[in-house]
Length: 443
Image 1 (tube, helix red, strand yellow):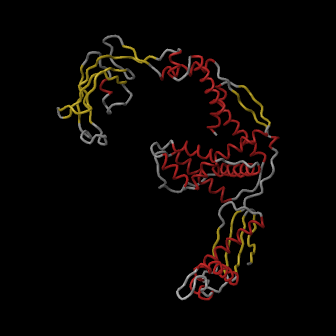
Image 2 (cartoon, rainbow, N blue to C red):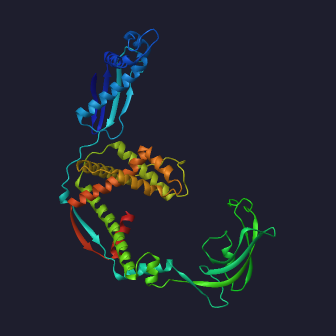
Image 3 (tube, rainbow, N blue to C red):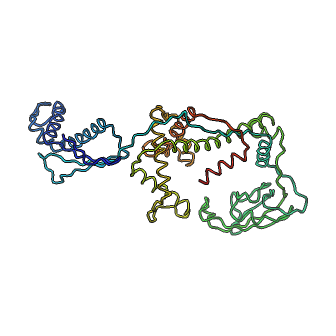
């Protein structure tokens, strides 16, 4: 076998590989010798079929396998000897298209090599960690929000008209074509106006009603309504308004705390403070991660595989275009040409991606099966009722697995680097942290 270099420019590599007919013939013979003991043929005992006969019958089929295995072996040996790592799958094509059995095989291989990543002194990286404490004001604000979600209703003054957000206690009887239908009646039903829990248009017609009033509400069941005998039909609901109530926030006390699973108000406040500080810590980590990536980006410089940068720039341009044109939900549109800004962002992402991959490999960072399972479960929650199908889909889809594994791996590498870097804590207010987060979103 002969391997001749034809291109070596930057990260681009090209090689001609010649596999001789003699090598292929030898490979075919090896396969036949290996299989001979198990082959049976009419007129011969098992394992005693002559090699010449085996070669005549099975040789052409085995020749293709031998050719593929020999070329794959040549490629693997090349990468092992050269130390090159291809950025993407190498392009391989046979150049003597008029090849026939007995000829040498000529193959062209080209690829872009991954660059050598320079060493980075991670201990020289300086970072600032923003720390926010959950003060009494923040805890009280969160408590007030909880109280509003646990709102109660109290009777309005007699004669008051119902408003959006009020609760009306009603008896109702629904009829279609003058006939009452099953499931269309109830007594003392507490309906919050604006909750959209009834047929569209029903609640709107009860805005402005008073206690002890009787009102007919006319609505049309949606065409896709679950009960076929009602779908698309007009119905009249005779509603007796028994009471009109206004929403009031629940009192902030031990009873409220117990509604949310806490022993008492003090325990609930402690839980809220812990949750708030966890949220602040998550936001602070995002700010520090960006600062870390900026610092690493400044510390390293190396050639980038053009194909990787081009693919990343196209993906960025495509994603941003869809964000600006949310009404387009498919991909039936003209190709989006990346701008100079997209190309610069792509270069940064590819450079940092290669650097983090190198750091993670050297630090032997791995994504565990448990971490992958958790990531798949988190994603599966977006498809209620189809979690099992999603799980099976991911198990059979290597690309999807990589998409889920990549951010976990990146975060673990970031944690590894942060442990080695010089980190200084700085206590700031919630508002200052929020400004830092907004600054990230604007970039």
